[in-house]
Amino acid sequence: MADKGLLLVLSGPSGVGKGTVKSAIVEHKVFPFEYSVSMTTRKPREGEVNGKDYYFVTREEFKQAIADNQLLEYNEYVGNLYGTPLGPVKEMLAAGKDVLLEIDVNGARTVRQQMPDGVFIFLTPPDLHTLRDRLEHRGTESEDVIRGRIAQARKEILVMQDYDYAVVNDTVANAVNHIKAIVDAEHVSVKRVIDDYRKMVKED
Ligand code: 5GP
Image 1 (tube, protein in one colour):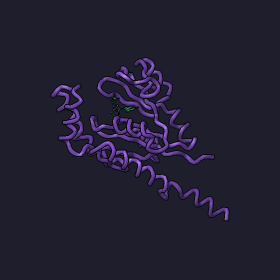
Image 2: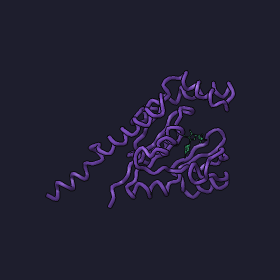
Image 3: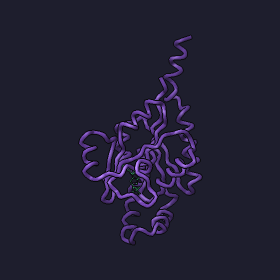
Image 4: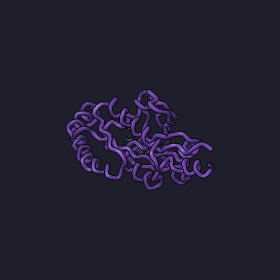
């Protein structure tokens, strides 16, 4: 039987650039993994593809998925529901594949409770000025909303104490390289390989 894959959870404060870092990892296939496509009630943005970026569903469909226990976790974020379908994650891990989730900090907390063996990576802004610049550049938020998000980020940054790794998103290339290094190291961590060696020494 194939060994179980790693569950990689990429999270961090709102506006830190989780989506951009995730897209870079997916596009360049930086290491072999499967991306867990989330379900959301948010409307697709231009260029987003159903089944690739998200499963775009109605609120009723989402509520039904919750009632049917189909979600590993879910959260409401600025008026929309987001959740991780459980079935595909379990199947991919059982098939020995590494699975990448890119979710908000509330979702990551739930996953940590459900699957404590996961590798929890917290993406941080280099500093709060950079976060403000990013939110301003996005140009989609009013000054009030930006102030609210910075206040939220101040609280969210210390959430990193519940994670295994903190990766600074100074440039996307640096963040991606650090994440690749983490995944490589996790594959050879003693706690993950010890059982194979126990079996090996027993056979001799
Ligand atoms: P966006 O609407 O910009 O694609 O995503 C908004 C927020 O939802 C981001 O912080 C993203 O990480 C988070 N998100 C995306 N998918 C999921 C999910 O399945 N579960 C949770 N809890 N958050 C998600």
